[in-house]
Length: 383
Image (tube, rainbow, N blue to C red; front, side):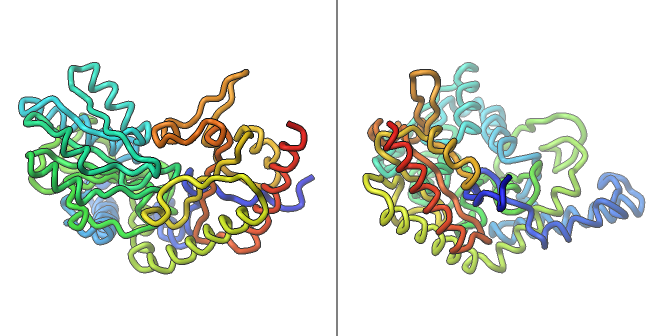
């Protein structure tokens, strides 16, 4: 029987709902139940709550409230950006540019767009997982509709040079989208500084509930609706608004706006403690991702000669983390991100993603290091 819960080091997968966010959402489970589209007092009250949250999201991103569309999650926001631009601007071009290290929420829609006749150009990354803006510039053509490059990678934490990429894209008349699901809440995300036309955020990555996200759409950008029905969200996202989730997302964004430097400093300290502890305790390890252009909370670490799934099995009662490789029978399928970065197979197959959060403690980091050291030693001794 477990005496204490495993150390949670999977905050890039999902975060708990912050207490302040839960408190803000409580009225939506009781008196604030109206339909925001209804003209009576109950609907007006719900509409006011939605618009307050829209303003909180806009304040964090540095945009107008009118430029924020609420969605059901980050995946939907990405789909709305890609399919919305492709459909609205189909007569202007057929090329979409993305990178080799994108989340499936970008790559899978791109595959579908390719089946519909669009040309998808995938630019490479270097050994740190970094896109070279010059590669994007070389790929641009007169018929480029959209460039979609993630702000920060969910596996290794590398932050992309979005501003430089956007400058090249805009010079060719292309729109720019960035998936900022992993970066929002950890580093500054300002749409004017990034110079993007569309930007995705996901609630459950920044201590809001699951089931809510948002897409920033710069004023004047044409976007076809992804869901068709009622006229909600300015006619660009039909469906009665998820007031509970939207209020939670707004509250979460307000927290970030007030405490970002504090959150980032704490996460960076905990991540560095993990890294230093692993370096001291275990030999033959490799850390993946850019050493400075990176999220403050993400640590991708590879253990040579081991399989990530075997390590996670050993850690099942002590540490909750994610694998960068999957084992199937006698084959090992490594992450496409690690493959694109050129991480040697002997390391890539033994990769873990450790991601800390706002409440991660030094004691938890030390417990995790001890547990990982034991697991690696056991596996190497028996392997």
